[in-house]
Amino acid sequence: MSDGPDEVRLDDIERTLLGARCTLTRLEVAERAGVPIELAEELWAQLGFPRTADDDVAFTERDVAALEMTAELVSEGILESDSQAALVRTWGRSFARLAEWQAELLAGLALQDDHPERRVGELVGSVTPRVGKLQDYVWRRHLVSAAQRLLPAVEADEEGQQLAVAFTDIVGYTSRSKHLSQAELVDLVETFEDETTRAVTAIDGRVIKTIGDEVLYVAESPRALVEVALALTARGEDDDDPFPQVRAGIAYGEVTTRLGDVFGPTVNIASRLTSLARPGTVLVDRGTFDALTGRGEHADDDPDTAPDGTPLSRILDRAADELADISPYAEHEDLKFRRLRRTSVKGYRSLEPWLVRKSRDRRSHPD
Image 1 (cartoon, rainbow, N blue to C red):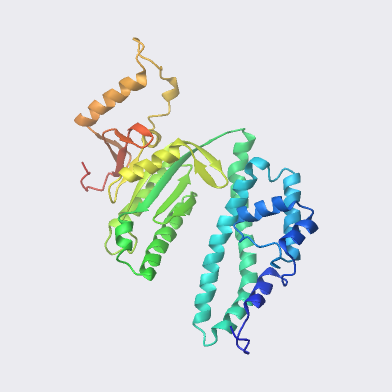
Image 2: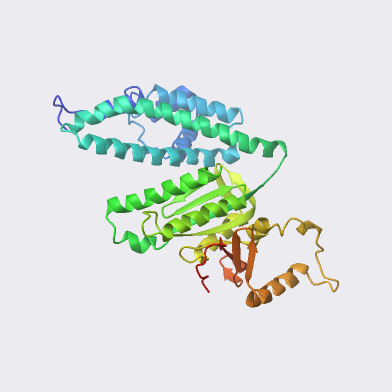
């Protein structure tokens, strides 16, 4: 790049973003912070920073301060050894994705100008400080919400939470992506993610993560989550709605939460149900069905075995399979259910799916 009056050098942008010109090597940063170079390198690798050579001048005094603060958090037990790597990796992945999007946005805006090199420098200098303040504001608001949600469970010494977990994915995403331009594909995914997020947050649910053509989200209320899934599948069936055709799977039960993610059998079952669902349908597990119909309220009072010693669950499962062949339908309030035959999926030999829809919806069930 030439150094003409309209050109902005990369090191000028670097200095603006980092707050100072790079004057230190990684060895000097570790020494000034009083941190072993091995620990510094491990932290930088977990954050996803590119590796530098011993003599590369790629750091500033801010890197020293950041490393010192990290060491303090470790010594105070805030970053415990068993969670340090996972937490730091989460930071790195989250901010790396955000940075990629912001860089693409600024570059796109700059290219629309007659002097893009100068314009990108102006944008970096004027936009990034405000974006940084907004990011801090968003983080603090989410921190308040997380504290309100999690602290009661901590005080009650609860190891897991009862949550409804849902996956919703775009039907035929792989085949559709082959015939869409890059801009069309981006529009499809953004519409899907944006509208799904709006629907989930409207019921006080949380979007856990998006995985290309799939969104994982949770809520305390199984009914509210079912309503979201039914609304999204209905939109996908409307040819006049730009929202793509989707399918969904929902499970309800104990969930392990960690670093903003969710784990456990309930999550796995919701994922398996999504893979079984046909386009435009919502499948729920037995836990969700029981919660929606009130059939699981007194389950703890039931005996574990029949008089002959046969596990009661086995008898009930056998009877339910026979009943499903005779009369597979059930209704509760404005919801209608159809119990499907048990099926074997990865990790589960006898998964019990229920198809759920609105009672007023007279579309036929898939067989």
